[in-house]
Amino acid sequence: MKEALIRFYNNKWALSLTSGVLLGFSFPPFPFPFLMIPAFIGLFRLMDLTESGKELAYVSYPGFLVWNIIGTYWLTFATIAGGVAAILANAAIMTIPLALMRYVHRSVNSALWSTLLVAAAWVAYEFLHHRWDLSWPWLTLGNGFSNAVLIIQYISITGVLGISFWLVAGSYLLYRLMDDPTPALRVSTPAVIIGLPIISLVMYFTYSPEYERTKETAILQPNYDSYQHLAGYPDARTPLVELLNQTDSLITENTEVIYWPENALQESLRQDFRNELQQLIETRVEEWQIPLITGTAYIVLYNNDEEAPLVTRGEFMGRPYNIFNAAVAFFPGNRSPEHYEKAELVPFVERFPFVDTLARIDFLTNIDWGSIAGYGRGTDPTLFNINGTDVPALICYDSVYPEWVSTFVKNGAGMITVITNDGWWGETSGHIQHYDYARLRAIENRRTTLRSANNGISGVILPNGDVEIRTEYWTRDGFLYDVPIVEDLTIYTRYGDWLGRLSLIITFGLLGTILWRRYR
Image (cartoon, rainbow, N blue to C red; front, side, top):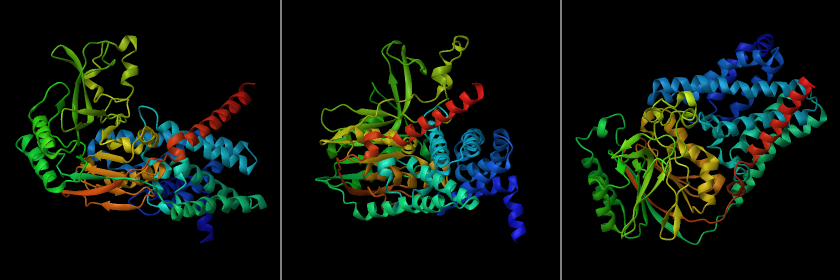
């Protein structure tokens, strides 16, 4: 047995694939986030077994590929080509920070300094990976701990990247301790691994939010089939009437706002034209005297080319236009509808990556980029004022970008609301992960977080991450909830991904040192 373990510990391919499997089973719906520790110990062992950064990338790629397949196989349910491309590309990108971590491991003798640099390198990668056109924050290490709310309360200070930093640092210290059990490592390793969870437990049991008012909110889950044209109905009007009637049977005289999910309407709305669907909604909103926020495709026409962004869909009625994945708010009285344009768009599925940059390149300007661009990209964290309270309507993918969510809270949102359509992923782990990740946003910002999902999972998550309501998937449902409106801002809300920026500075300093040593 001992010899078999030794052979395994020295087998590069076995370590790589095993680490990938362990990482895959560290994320929801699997309740094993601590499997990340032995997974990273395996990756650190690969650093010692490989002769170069290139070899490490080559050997670790299969493991990262396995991790991506187990964690995000469901992407292929929405688009096979896009899902496969995303999995292959993301696994390749993951090898880059690992190669940098190998350099630190081989070059820095101090265990504590190398721990700081190794953890900073991985967190810098996650920070940057959230901020480009091929961004994919889904497998951020901290997301795997989304259901371990008792031990992650400190993310109200650090954000989810704090979990990633803790995980990598603790795993690396443990690996160094196995190889060289010095007194310093014997003290620092358990202090790091156990210290933060203990602090978090204290934060969890002492947290007591203060609020002066609540807002009764109606959340609808219509359960339309996204794979059928018009959700299987003969026209766009019929499902809307059903949803209006479902809402009518749910609301009370105390209801202050109604949320419908992403893609709730089977026909797009237009900014300067009231079609039949809009008129039906406005009539009911006036009867109810309750604002309603719904997800829809929304057509925006620009007055001229100067007002329009560089890439548009073309012209309609002689004016440039774009289509946005949007949330539209309807209000009683004479108040005009308002809308929020989704900012974080799924690469390829919703928007072609780098299209704005490509459209500026001289020899590519003749290409009709508008025809392949996809949805327009929003830039403003729009809030809707409902009876004196600012509320958001984050759309689907928006909710896995921690700093974007915190921007809404920083700008005055007293609660967090996500409208989404997770029906594209079918009976997979995708919709489960999406719901669970919202628990992180609740803790980071200390806001009650609500989800209105077309097929589920809809629900309510408390500011400490506890689940208050969780609907069944693929059912028609709806509920009312008195949402506490909180005004206090957490450290994370105030300063965003400060840990990611600090890690980036440390990593750039490391890269500068590498280049200086190589070319001096």
